[in-house]
Image 1: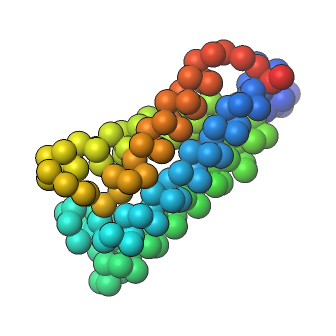
Image 2 (image 1 turned 90 degrees about the vertical axis):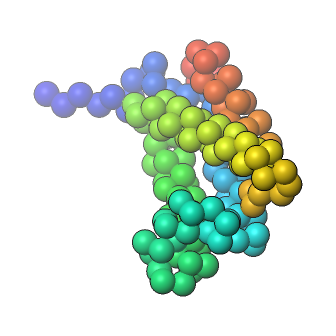
Length: 144
């Protein structure tokens, strides 16, 4: 006997959740571009460490790491969230938390620095979209 959880009606995601998730991944893509342009990997040691795991050229490594991150987000949307797989809510909550922490940390580091910190320009977009996705997820609505 095969159990297909992906067809479970309770797993169906409301279209607002699917849209909010797609927007969150697009916001992360914009955020990654800002971090790259303003060289987060040069001013934030953990970003430099991650970049160095992919290439000795930190700009290249950072671009690769962020391409993988956004690519994973796109995969989550296409393969899990959009078709409302049984794991879709878990992926959506994971990204909600990840991006809320990401956006909050950029604002925090900007305050600590007393000025611009790479990524703070798009951090409010990440925060707002993560909060919106979280609100959609907690509304408990099923497919409309």
